[in-house]
Image 1: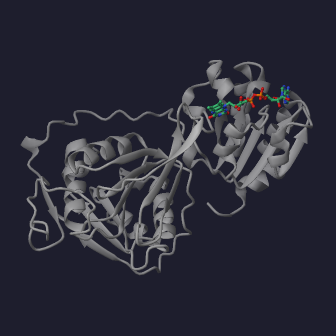
Image 2: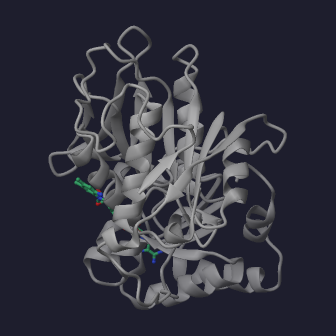
Image 3: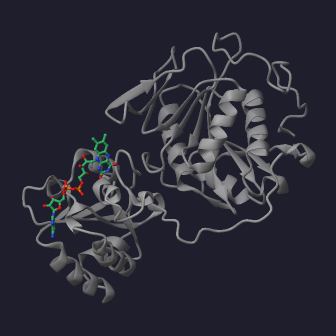
Length: 372
Ligand SMILES: Cc1cc2nc3c(=O)[nH]c(=O)nc-3n(C[C@H](O)[C@H](O)[C@H](O)COP(=O)(O)OP(=O)(O)OC[C@H]3O[C@@H](n4cnc5c(N)ncnc54)[C@H](O)[C@@H]3O)c2cc1C
């Protein structure tokens, strides 16, 4: 496969297209700009892409003249490229081809690798989703360069070092490690969905879309997509506007049925603290916190969750936090906008009734137009 927005497919530095040349950061060849790989499925972009573009813009502000680029791959995805500009990209590289309609490691990494070699971004950011993790690993080994996976913080040192500070929990999540990639370019990181805030989209923002000429030799692609089975029960915590979360205070799995009713009445989904997951009351995909997911819903309702720091770190970016706990000293009540001291088995049924009737504080908070 070749993919190039320029007249000649050979990279401008004259290196072979298979990328056998070194990726060192000695400065002999300039690496400049931040590239965000935008993830979409069936033309539907994942919010983590816009969150990464927002963070890329914030970091670019510390690097004078640093462009923010977005790479959009897929089939019939020009609208995603337009959105990428609205969310902060200066330049969008668009690879639109039927062979990119469904994610496969090889064609997606071929295109991304080609873009890295031709456009030479100093930083490449990818969402730490299932496909993002797969793609990032495949690229980093082929460039070759370092990859800091699953970051929860990203920053950049100002010139002259321009080093990406990629931070993530380490040593069984007991420490935060900040990892630098000093000798190779690009500096690559994947980042968890929900940890960064997207910019408010501005459809009038100027930007340029450059179409990449993609030719694909299907006979060279090892994976064939035979059938796609959609998972209907996957919980998308990172994209939810409303989350009703339960902890050890539920006392058993039955409590999640009650929370499910409240979540449904509010148009939301169910989350959980780690002990509830570890007790087997609910699946791991619902866990919020340091070792779970980071979320930023409009409304977060915490039920029987004490508010340990490892939980707070995953949900404190929520717009409105409502907490129900029978212990008036529970830390979650301090972190909440609305603190309800009481037994959740008395409070939640009353909230369900209100929500079903379309009234009450929760309904108002869930409806209000705010940041997201
Ligand atoms: C390295 C590491 C990583 C971790 N990662 C995570 C993580 O990702 N996510 C996470 O959540 N935790 C994580 N933890 C665990 C964290 O430290 C806490 O132990 C955990 O968050 C506590 O869960 P909880 O609030 O559900 O339980 P508890 O702390 O036991 O709190 C239960 C609360 O429910 C209240 N309650 C009891 N019954 C009722 C009732 N009927 N009505 C109302 N309130 C009631 C109690 O007053 C109490 O405040 C991690 C810990 C470590 C060491």
